[in-house]
Length: 360
Ligand code: SAH
Image 1 (cartoon, protein in one colour):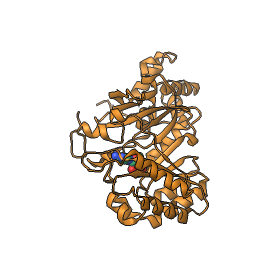
Image 2 (cartoon, rainbow, N blue to C red):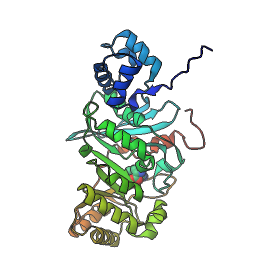
Image 3 (cartoon, rainbow, N blue to C red):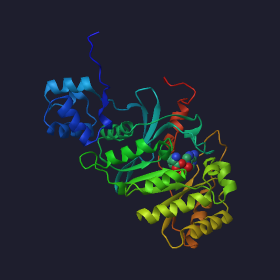
Image 4 (spheres, rainbow, N blue to C red):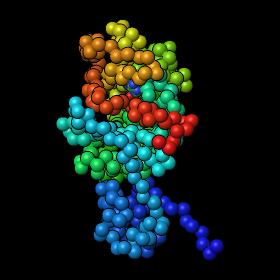
């Protein structure tokens, strides 16, 4: 033993500019501008040895006092239908998570995972079938974007937190991720181009309203009465509609950001004309004349749930009925239907769950 204590090595992808400057100046005894050089390399998902404008001794010192690991591309599927790309990433501990890159007129958008697994238990969702294994760090979430950009050679301009996991069940890491991804000296993706989707953790929605971030909040509603919402979303027993909807209204009042409600249409469960009427009535009662949007998602059948999609005609009829009731509603475009692009389907197919199987 030489008596020295090995300092805990710090993860570069989790560092904001101040932390990088401190690392460079205090640990590496270098000039602060080196932090900007490193940050630029991280934006390109570069490895230490690719950082060619850094002096070799600095690289050697960085390797000693910091870690840098990006998610590894375990599988990558490209849709023949619409060029949507699904990444299955392997994290350092072997956990698999998914991200999907979609091309829109406004540029590239990525849907990222926030947890390995999920403990919310929604009946139609593949992500929750094996429970939650762990939260992702802000560096891992950032890594999902960086690796996708490098792999595809594109710049991603929009981010949605709608992959595996419940973002508000990983609040602190997700908040740090949101600040990192929107930092001017980082990827510089404005909060206006970021959507966060939640199953409705009411106290965290109230916290988020105070963070002063110009995000779009999407709220998974899926039913307009407590009995049926609880039957498909156990979280509704903890935070029923009479608590969730006022929290959404307060979020709009605090941030001025229009809420988007997600409503997954399940044949014979929640897609009758009377369900459209009940949904319109509920939202109007809760929101008064405030704006809101309803995003209709035809359910993506997951074997374990037994839920089925209704016909295209019934989906469009549901949407038209809402529109006639002056509800701003649209049907979500289905992208990547041929590559299992829906939440958690690849991770689940790879057999990962909370009980083990973590070394695939
Ligand atoms: N935990 C967050 C983000 C998850 S997924 C949330 O619950 O909002 C993003 C959206 O896809 C949610 O609205 C979720 O309910 C929905 N979803 C999950 N599985 C689905 C499936 N099989 N078919 C259609 N929508 C699904």
